[in-house]
Length: 338
Ligand SMILES: Nc1ncnc2[nH]cnc12
Ligand SMILES: [Zn+2]
Image 1 (tube, rainbow, N blue to C red):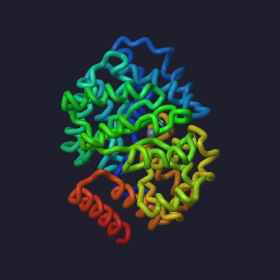
Image 2 (image 1 turned 90 degrees about the horizontal axis):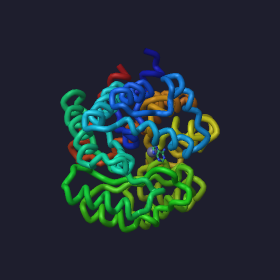
Image 3 (image 1 turned 135 degrees about the vertical axis):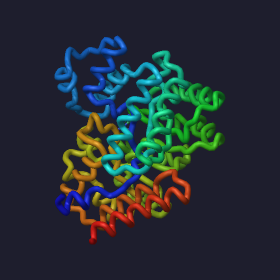
Image 4 (image 1 turned 90 degrees about the vertical axis):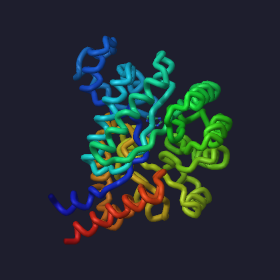
């Protein structure tokens, strides 16, 4: 292994990955066949020709068609199981995984089926890979907030095991302020709270997510850099930002990897981590995201270690879990210097 690859693969926590975004094209075609789902794609090649995105919405349009292949609890378990195996190979030791509840319930699939299937695979992930996980139920911000309220109320009433809530889908025009009640209900129930903000939307949405939703972490947040006062606050309060480099390039929120603000964010002292977002759509899992930024910016071992430690410090881990992961990074560092 070259030094660069050795540098690029520390043990990490992945904090921003959408389960539906881990459906690989071959899995989509195969599962559609098994479940008798009529997709608009004539073949695997036809599907693969759809992955040239112009913005967030063009990607969401494809994502929301393809996820319809997931039908029963075994499907949800299978996709989760595949992600955990692939993420483990990429060095992920702890994963906090989003799923889009309304994407499934609106098709008549009960929340019990979705969460039950995912959870069974997460339990197995601990046995198979020693990987700890959290499950974050995300709401589509371009649906009415009342819909999110109903979904959350049902999950809480039924005692379904989730660890937190998030907010995703089309951002511009759907500010965090719309979801104040939903987030209050979640916080009152003791759930963790995060939200996508500052991906395509303005820095003001990041402020709203902090001030009105009281999020513990911001997903993406790259447009925060347009507001120096906000940056100062994010640094001072050590607000985690889960950055997704390949996603930002593929969805054209940055022009090229060379223009990605990750090095600037590190220099500013922001608590940034590297994540894969929708790895089956954007050209790779966490290892590919690390490799892309290491190669593009020539990050040294110190910067890579910082990113790994940031991911651990940004995770919803208890003190024992956090210490365990920092210990794994210590061991990785020792190995490298031998
Ligand atoms: N990057 C992203 N932004 C908003 N919603 C998403 N859903 C899946 N990936 C997303
Ligand atoms: Zn995302």
